[in-house]
Amino acid sequence: MYRYIILTTIILINALTPTHAFNLTEKLAECQTHLNANCLTTGTGGTALGCYEAVLKQEPTNSEAWRGLDRIKARYQGWINRALNRGQQYKVQAYQASIGLVDDLKTRLQASIPNTPTSTKPDVFVQLGHSENVSAVAFSPDGKLALSGSYDETLKLWQVESGREIRTFKGHSDQVKAVAFSPDGKLALSGSRDGTTRLWNIQTGKEIAQMLGFENGEWVTITPEGP
Image (cartoon, rainbow, N blue to C red):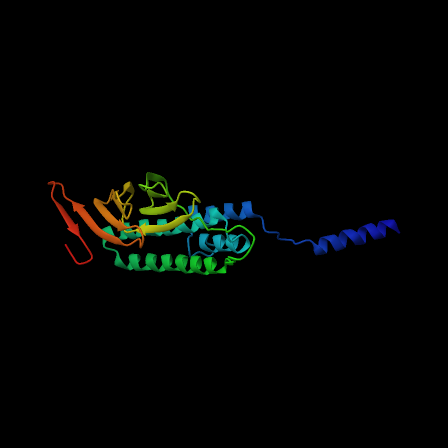
């Protein structure tokens, strides 16, 4: 009698226990495997994009998964630069389309994170951060903002007190090696291995001017209106 009850209980427990429970550590390791194999957005055995999407649907603020999406974009951007140097425009278009898939996913996932300003719970900010090493940091004159430059070819603006990422500055085509604020804190300056120095509007994130240096020591300044 007791043996029958125990056996029945075990059967019920097994029936109610998920056979494929979500294991975050294993899933992130799987995502990294896809990334290492360059199975980024296409592939028959799974992709890094689909893998990170699965993680973020379970944990919308998982920082490792968000960084993974940035790594996918960074890898495609590197391939775009190489294809441009080789004149392979068809590859450039394909890689740009893949970056669009990543951006679309990020937009959808960010929109799914509930915004509850009246909630008593603390605010949750998705901190994407840089996808490569940080190479330069500068603080604003009032000490309230920080600017970082990275090997991922971008600059990022941060709020010092909260640690919140405010915006990203994109335009360089190689590693950012130096960053600085203007004396009034309204402009940012960046130098890159792409041979340009760029001036940015802190409030909008827009590029104001690009200064290109030549081996003979001459410089040319390019603005949205032209050289």
